Image (cartoon, rainbow, N blue to C red):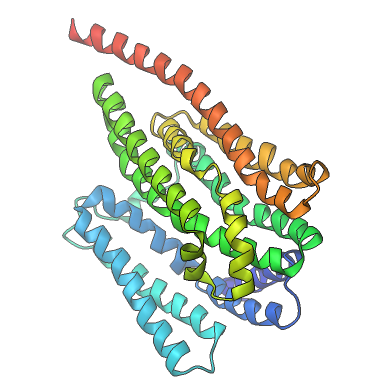
Length: 356
């Protein structure tokens, strides 16, 4: 059997289990399965698309931006043709558009990385797996991997509890709330990804002053943004909900729920700035612990425990998110202050020795 086909079958099987756990049944499983299956068939194309991260280290930011924009523009155009014009393809059209867009993006990246414009050309001889290089990379990548991979598990926990205590309306509201949260957190991810190489470079150069400046600049930017988006959501919840759904009953229900769900998102900028700085400083263990602490140790148990403490059960489920956020930020801040100061003292000591 073709490897890509096997991956597609595996992807659709997992999709059916997950969708059933989310409470989505019947035709929704069939149609969503077609979409997930189409995306799964893209296989290596999707993996190669993410090698575009290498462009940030091989050329100017314009090339990386063109690659991302090219993918998005092509995706929008193909989606318009396959869904809006053809119509009959529906979800399958969206999956096919995604596959084609990823294939074009992968082709563009491979042409660039094997061409003359890149500073470090992709060569066969350099593709050998070396444990001393790969293992530290995997360790540093575990924290963001846990953050991303546990999203589905969190969604299953939230939706199963909300379906029990709030019915279909609560599950529908949770879908909108998750979209708003992801939408609002994307700039934070961009800020931290942009700051990581700067912090890492200066840490490797033993320049403690620049490491501090880069971190505090990142912290100010993250907190300013997170507080701004939190304030807008709290003041104008309907405006954000209407971006994703215009059903009157759902908008009314989600309007109070989003204020609870994102109650502590204003300080989440501290969490992501500190956690990603740990990665930039090579402290993979602490960063992994903080990722597990927030989602696995705090959030999942709170989803099931809080409904037993409040009369309004659905309210208690939504409340689990801000309580977990507050607990995570508190532990992260204390841990970061201690370890960052120690790292800077060691760096300043090494800098003084080198300066003699």
